[in-house]
Length: 82
Image 1: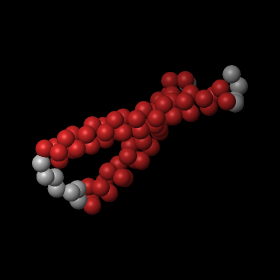
Image 2: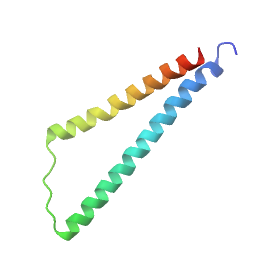
Image 3: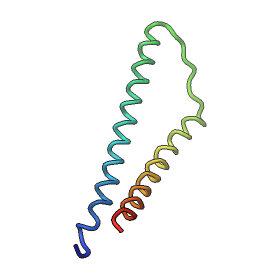
Image 4: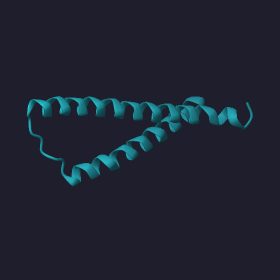
């Protein structure tokens, strides 16, 4: 295998796989929490709204975690193939 698509594909496929799995896991967990909240609200339990700091931290944490995972996959794959 000389240079070309064959050398790039493991990095691309690994990063894409991790990103898609992380997004799916996020929405699955979010759905379960939302469903639990809906059931509890129907039962009359009162919830306090989230603080803006907590919302901001959530919004910043997801891209940072995904970036770290992509970089880790790239370096791990590069280390394994060398």
